[in-house]
Length: 217
Ligand code: E4P
Image: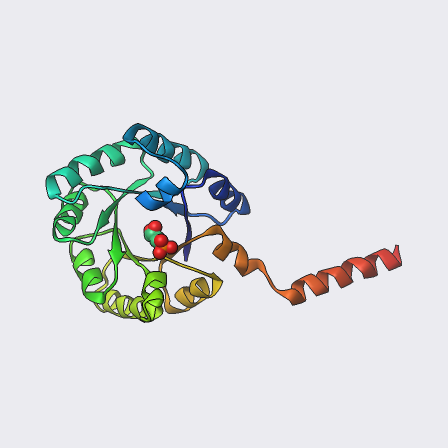
């Protein structure tokens, strides 16, 4: 399972990278705005800074909603750096854009996936990744993990190469359950990744080992 971090915060990306387990980064316009990154030039430059930290796929989202503009914007993003994956929303023109980018060998991440039907369409159009938003489904009393299971079943039935990128991860149990189901990738906040480290018995056990060592020396 690949681990992506879902942030535009360079310090958090560095921290995850230093752990040695980071495979990529996902961003979106809201995450960029949260870091105070605005204006096309600054945004493009920020993607380059992210690419310098992590050696893996970096999703950069288009903000256009019509095919022509999405293609123009996506090509600018893809030409910025070989690690860039063009993030496209699940709308009608988005499906057409996925097909276009697949035909010219540009990687894509189809975002805002909330149903198995949307994931099927994105795979048919040749998306590299689909991003089902499991946390946002949980927020409205729909089980996000059920969607991951459904998509896994459909993709396995037909050997689709599209990778399931479980997104909108809220906590460590989301990561563990996505791994059990067989999501190819998860993208989550640093806190959800660091949460995997924690167990009180590890802390108690380590404290005992260290105090016993001191007694004998
Ligand atoms: C996916 O790539 C999105 O950036 C993200 O996971 C959305 O998560 P949120 O629901 O926490 O905003």
